[in-house]
Image (cartoon, rainbow, N blue to C red; front, side, top):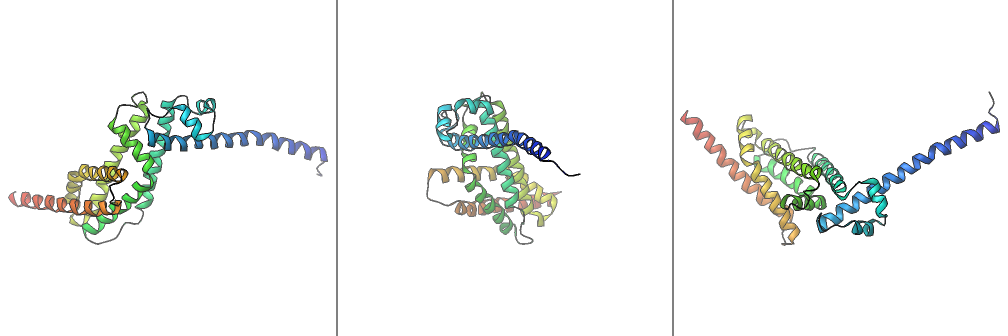
Length: 236
């Protein structure tokens, strides 16, 4: 059936009407992302307590009323910043570790994992800086969701460290690799925490340099743990 001009006009009018909410939603999403981007940068630099809503207005050019439209409070904004940062961080970790080396020594495998992880740390510094500020202070007590995210990130980080160590020592057998990973997971986290703080302090050493030293230390500890397990096994 032939379409009449009027039916075509009605169709265009309908499409335009349908498009208006879509355009509005896109603008709203863009504003939301701009606020999250700015809040991530500003809070990483000033801390949560030191970040005022006026500072966010200045950083985004978005009115305070619009910020409160997207986020009910500064605490709610922090919660979203941390949740988004955590997703991005662990997505980057999985991407970086997609093709682990096959074969090789524990030193070679662990060195590869730590080097790749160090690269992720360098490129996610805003999130990690804010994370450490929240770990070391009580300034975000009014944002329990954000603090729960901090706990979850630290827990998942230790699990990820166990995975990297276990994968590096897998040639020694599953039981030995798991024992070594359980022994050293917290130490590995300490190494990354210290390396990141030093990097932020401008101490003049690269993340790659720290990761090479951390590899040496963790391999030595792993070998000592394996030796202790062998002695224990002979005594049985």
